[in-house]
Length: 73
Image 1 (cartoon, one colour):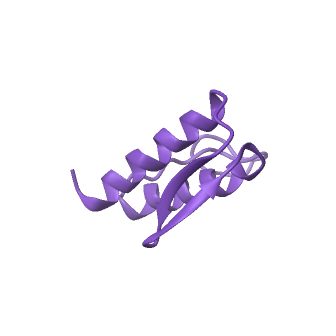
Image 2 (image 1 turned 60 degrees about the vertical axis):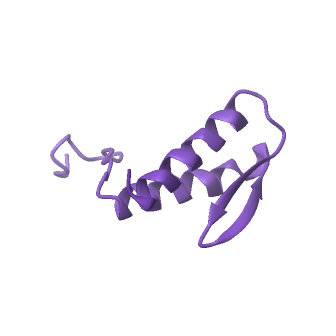
Image 3 (image 1 turned 45 degrees about the vertical axis):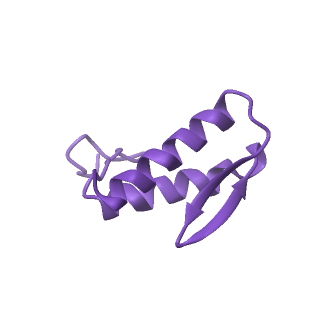
């Protein structure tokens, strides 16, 4: 497992803890420990997306007004 994949796995585990009732979780972001709470889970989700891109695991979700190919409807 690469360093990127390790960080991604840890971030996903932290998000899972928040989603299942933990009041505070910690994750390492750019070499620093960051605390997340249920109120700041959006920041953790953004960090996960950033890591997915960095690790080459880009998840694409169509936005409103696009088909599955990314074309405008």
